[in-house]
Image (tube, rainbow, N blue to C red; front, side, top):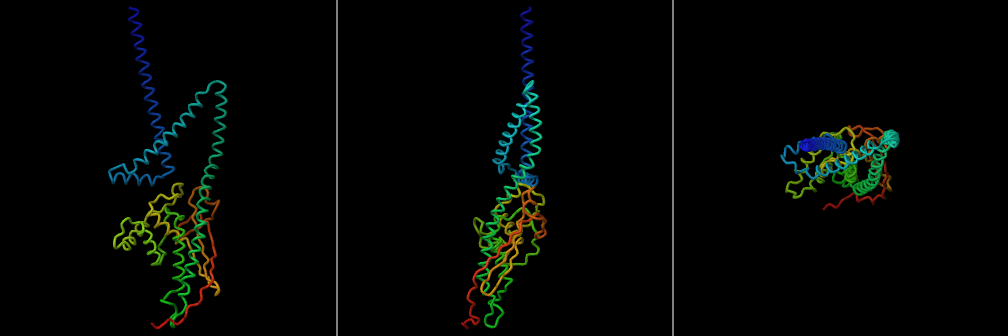
Amino acid sequence: MNDETSKSQNKDRSTGRWSVGASRAAGELVVHLTGVLLVAVTLAWMTIGGTHLQWMVEVTQEWGDASLFASELAIHLVVSLAAWTMLYLIGKAIWSAKAEPGRMIKKARGTVMTETIIILPLLLTLIMGLSQVAVMNLASMLFNYASSQAGRTVWLWHPETYPANDEAARRGVTEDMVIDMARIQAAASLAPVAPSDFRPDESQIDSDNFFKMRASLLASQLAVPPNDSGRIALDGAQNLNDFDGATEYRFYRALDTASYPERSVRKFTFAYLALDVELVDTGEQVGVTIHYSHKVTFPLVGHLFGSPGTVAGLPGVYINMTRDIMYSSQVPPNAQLPEQ
């Protein structure tokens, strides 16, 4: 009788331990899943941004298929799982210490927390600053190239502004037209480093050549250009540039989030509006003085590199660059063209 009672009690204990273990495992699973989801949402918000996340949800709902972002989502979840595992192991190591070592760890934990609070802003500023320095270096190199292109354009076209056959200029070419063509060449050179997620006011643009050049940049990316690719690109470029411009600074936005066609249109537009070209003609030399206002797009570090300003109605912090490019003037063309 006692043996049967003992077996029954052992069975009850075994069942109870199994139930407690299963409940504990289920609870830990819920905690881990919740932790991974929280880390995933936090990382997504910090790196992608709420606007882009909303766009991804809307696109998925419209297409009715989530496979478009399946691989990116899987990678993001794996990274979030790794981050949560690291946080969990660190927390477990801290709380599992005992006795005297436990008090030391608690003291160390408080010290580490204090040091983290002090160092984290400096670390973030350092990361943003190094990123901005890299972009600034690219902008400076491309600005040298853009200045050279603007100067060569003026050197090539400026003789066309001289009188010919009792006309004010050859085929109606004016200095304003030459300056605009130089500005377009410079903008095309600077487009790769100009921001694309901040929309400037383009209502002040009054240049047919600008719109044609922007359409050419877009049309060149069409996989199978149709016969009327020029007209399609003109309308398409206008539509791509008609977007809700961002106002807040985000790390991901500084690295561009738009597609390549969108980037081409928006970057070229911003670069054109951020440029100012002055024609310089000394008689022996001709060239340009070119000014460019490069927008600082990384958060936290704006005032370390630039100064507040406004470009095309877009307030922000800008790095102002200036170059003087001069070439020897061409021999003045014959003022009297042949009759035939």
